[in-house]
Length: 621
Image (tube, rainbow, N blue to C red; front, side, top):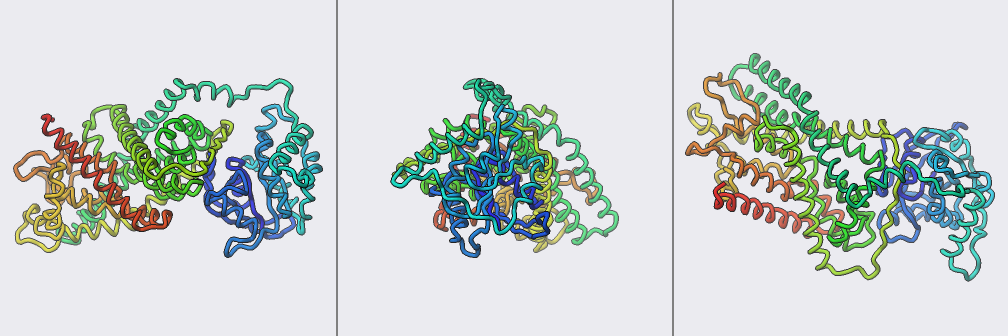
């Protein structure tokens, strides 16, 4: 068994992909790999080898959970895993001074080692003159230069994996009684003078010049805000055409089923339950994929680390270190990997706080809810920039609220006895890795469709049954809904949600979305089956038209601008996600903590929504 180990952002996972061909995620930002990944490949000699991709680490003496996993594997202490037969130390050739620190610690363990000198293209462009043979001579281990992102040097690396590989030579840099850290630093300095000579005059790289603009105290923030607005604008603008196709396809499919089936429960189940429920969610797939495309581009090009640098000051004011940035940013895609990514945080107190506030980063599951309501709030004839500003404000409100709660909670937990330092590596800017980005987007598309075809489909059928049975005498649809199990449930919920501006149907949709936030759209599509006057009874209007036509019993519009803002605020703060609650319980080691988080966020959501609706009504809006 071979173990890949290296600093975050050394290209370790890229090398793992190049060796095994597996669909492993690669992000150009420190800390993406937080769990063990394994795969197999064949050497040119025909030998089948198993390889483990260990979490990135800066030292073998770090207390963080993910780095402890790497140490346990190297020492043969991880249950179910044997001690590796060979360790491939992956280092960034353009940052040898820092990356060799970990390599020396691994060599000192006495394990068979090989040094993978990655990103030689970046090193050469910066004017660095490398001597791999001299490195191998001084370290006493094989050294293979490569560029994993372009599959250069992969064959040579496989050829070098001959077994048994000799154990690493004695660590000659260690002197009895001397400080190991100091002797390592001295040895690395001498080694780099011999084998990694830099030009006499420092040359500004392209990344240095671009960073002068993008990390400027003013210009950097303007660019960052512009990037976010551009992403939100593209979500509304570029998705119009494919969303129109999906909407037209949904209507055509419903019409075709209507023409095949006689009026009755079966036709209602297929058209209203399956097509209406699932279609009310699937139609937002193009916008969700555009969000993940944007995230993939930011990761792949190296801009994500710059965003972390800009956010570092704000996070410090919230009582969090830079290590909390990636888990919180990951939560914009999904809170579950965001919570799991907190394993990179050394401080147990900071990790708990980050887990607690991560669900307030609006995830992609909330996006269908936002994208359903925002165009109604602004009226669809208004431009996408207005909608982009509203979406930006939604994300900003959730993020700032999370930082505020983190600040209060972090203060109550008290400071750490030994606060850890946060090291942020600025990778060079790179062209987008389109293979990774396309794989990343397609994986998210399949995950969304699979969810729509299983969980949302099942819940849509259940919701249809609850809105249909028991049946009331007569054909009046409002009476049928009121008499049904769902109508009775809504009647119980309405007193709790009416102060927020919602009726029982909306309250029921909120309740069912606890299984998954996207279910809110499916629930609304089933619950608000409004027919336009003069239409045939078998026809159904689209979801936004159904919602816009909804009325209170006295004829007042149900969804006013104020009630829609109240609904948006509720979903910004509410933890409507059962899988996230389960993951929080596992990662925090306490169901009390997970249930307390759910109760707290639900209470905040209800109170914030109440304040918006009642305050706005009092002010005359």
